[in-house]
Image 1 (tube, rainbow, N blue to C red):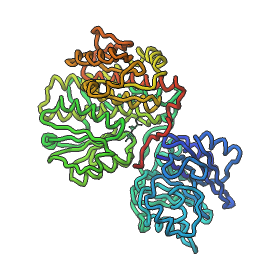
Image 2: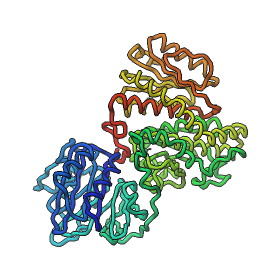
Image 3: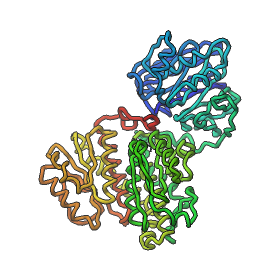
Image 4: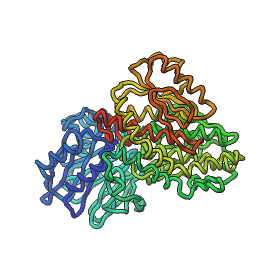
Length: 606
Ligand code: M6R
C-alpha cells in the first residue's frame, strides 16, 4: 500500500521519480508528491490530490530541478485525502516519504510538545521525530536510527536533507523496500517493478535494516548502525511486462495473457504422459510427504479463494489428508492449534500482504513448516517461508487479481498432485489431472476466443443491475465466491457468492426481479441439484446467467456453454469468463477498472 520512489544519480530526478510513481500507482492512488534537491542544495516540493496524472499537471506548472529526490503515491490511512496529508512531508530539513503505520504517533506527538504539524498524518510525526534528533551536526542516518528505535508500527521510508546533499536514507520494518544499483545512480522503490529498465541489480532490505544511499554506493546497517551483509540480487522481468501492450486496460491484458503465463506456471512441473506432478520449491523428501496429515492454506481475498478451490481437489486426490483454508486477517489473531505433521501453504500474489505475512510468522512460531505460493519474486513472504514456489504469472498491474488466481490454483493443484503421487492417490485421477493441466493454457485461449463477444454482450445487458448472487456447488463454489469478488471490486455492483445449497437457508429471501444470479453448473453428479437451485431462483423472478460445460438442456435467461474436453478443472475455465464478465460490466459502467475506488494492490497495512 502506497508507493515510494527515491533517486540519486546523474539524471534529472523529476522524470525518474514520476516514471517510478506511475509504475507504483496501483499501490495507492489518492494523492501523490515529489520532493527534489537541486544543485544549489535548494529543496523543492510539489504535491497533488488525485491520481499521478494530477501530479504530472502540477509538475508542468512547477517543474522540479535536481538530480536527487523522493516521491510517493498514497493510499490514505491517517488523515483524509488532502494536499497537506500527501507525501513527501517535511519538517525543517527533513524530507520524508513513508509507507506503513506509526502506531504510537500520539505518544510521539506528546513527546515533541512544541512541534506544530501541518497534516493529520502519522508520517509527518515521524518526520518531526527524525528532525528532533537531527541537530548539532548529527548525521541524517544517526537521527533516523534514533527516531526509528522509538517507533512502534510499520514503515518503509526514504529521507533526505538539504544539509547532506547526494544522500538518501532508507529503512524498513514490515513495508517493502528495494534499492536498485545503477551505473552512477541509485533508485529506491517499494517494489522492483519501478526499477525495471534502470537496473537489474538490487538490494532487498530486510525488516530492521536501513541503508545510506548515494549515487555510487549503498551501505546497509541495522538500527544500531552496525554494518549488515546484504548482497545485491538479480531482478527478474522486463519493462514490457508492465505496459498495457495494446490493450485498453491492464485487467484485460492480464485476463487474455493467462494462456501464456500459465505455461510458465506449469513449466517443468507436470508430465501428462507419466501422470506425474512435481513442485521443486517445497524440498520435501518422499518420507516427509508421507508424514503430512494436515494442510492449512492461508490467504486473503482472491488468494484465499484460490486456496479454497485447491482444497477441494486436495481432498479428492490425496488419501488420508485433512485440509483447512483460512482467511489470514482472522487466523492471525485466533488461538489456533495445528495437528502434528501439518504443513502450511501461504498464498499471496504480492508476497507482501500484512495479514498473510503475520499468519506466516504465527504458524512458524508453532513449529509448522511453511510453503509459499507467491508471485512477486523476492517479496517478503517468499523470503520468510521455509520453502515454496513462485507461480511465475509475471507482474500483475491491475488491482483486481485475475491471472494470479489461475496460477495460484494451478500451483496448488500441482502440489496436491505431488502429494497424491507419493501417497497412493488414484493413478487414473492423477493422469487426468496432469493431462488437463497441460491442456489448460490452450483451453483457456479457446474459451476466451469463442466467448469474448458473447460475454461483452451479456455484460451490457446486466450492467444496469445493482445486486447479484454468484452460486455454485463443490468446486464451482470457490469460483462463485471469486466471481462475486471480481464483480464487486471493479463494477461496484453489490455481489455475493454462495454455495447454491445455502440459498434456501436465507439468501433466497432477497431474490426478486431486481437481482441477477450467475450460476456455475458443472456436468457432474451434482448437476440435477444445481438445476434445482436455478429453478428456485427463476420461480422467484430472478434473472439467471448460467456458465456450464454441460450439453444438457438448461432453462435460464442466458446460458454460456463451454465446449471443452476438460472435465476435472472446468471451474478454472468458467472463472476466466467470469473475469471477462466483470471487466466488461465495469467498462460499461464507466469505472476505472485498473484502479477501482478505495482499493490498492498490495495491502501492506492491517
Ligand atoms: O497480494 P495478495 O495475493 O496477498 O493479495 C490478497 C488480496 O488482497 C487480493 O487478492 C485482493 O483480494 C484482490 N484485490 C482481489 O482481486
